[in-house]
Image (cartoon, rainbow, N blue to C red; front, side, top):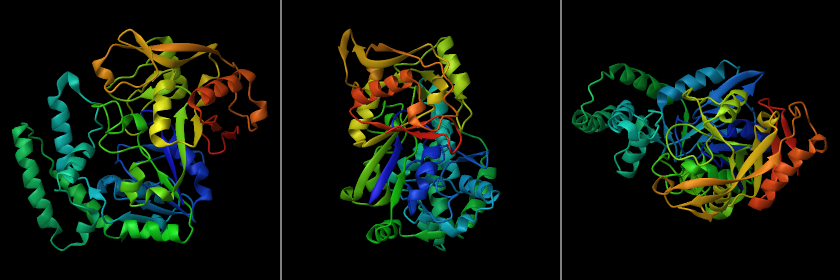
Length: 421
């Protein structure tokens, strides 16, 4: 069977640590979508590690890690990541596999991303400029190069053909930067990738399932960035929800069992786009400072606000979430009062549904107040020792969502997770 672990907000929920926490119970961990815009932060031997494309099980000797066909892969980033992993004494060649159907990010994809975002002016989406969007466009446009192609003796010819097509687009967008250094790095990365175990991913993973191996599908970004169900057009270019597991790995729906949703105890967002509960005051700044809310990939300050239960309930619904993990609960330790958004006032009328396109309506959050716990929970190990006010906060969220919070993360460390149900 396959369990799924994914984010329920706009990404940055702390999924990497949670995957790492659950990893010992699985035989295979697979990334099913996204690209190097993901930044899953782990702490290994008290050292911070950010994984962008490699599944978060790489630091466990017994776990097989698969980069699935739904991912768009940057060879340059992969090479740098592998060097970081190797610095911890991990032999990444042993347990890291790549699906041959995985699409490649080319240097010209990065250039197209940069040129496109530049032309948007004040309407920028907030792209990480990693080339993800253009790479997915080539996938749906049936132009893409895939990992299996790098084993073809004519790969360079295929690359040049697609590069020339991209160059015409770049010329029309008046992009004239020299990307020759990018290309040099790219081909170094491709040569590096040829040493990997490149497999027919769908057969590979289904054979593991047939052998009764436990599989964890690891999502990137967050549900509210899903290309179909997120806050369009300020979304990513892939399906970040649980349905993306089937197309991103080639597994049938009936093989999916648990869907573990990860949410912060509050809410953050990086880049442009609607954010109903965003705080532009001292409280928002306090959340950012205490929570160290800066992008793992970009370093950009994250926008901060109270937890949005309307959006969270929507994410639980479309994902079929069966259990919840709440991260960064310790960030709220020093707040006298907490607020939760329990409804939206849309064009003057109160509702509990996420609008089709938030950017096209006048929307105000409707808040309920909860008492803060004013207690340092970072050293706590047992749920029975949690402050009463925190238990009330959790119970309030559980009741609204109809899905139980089973784990609470109370710090960045591997061991700082409390089972609460």
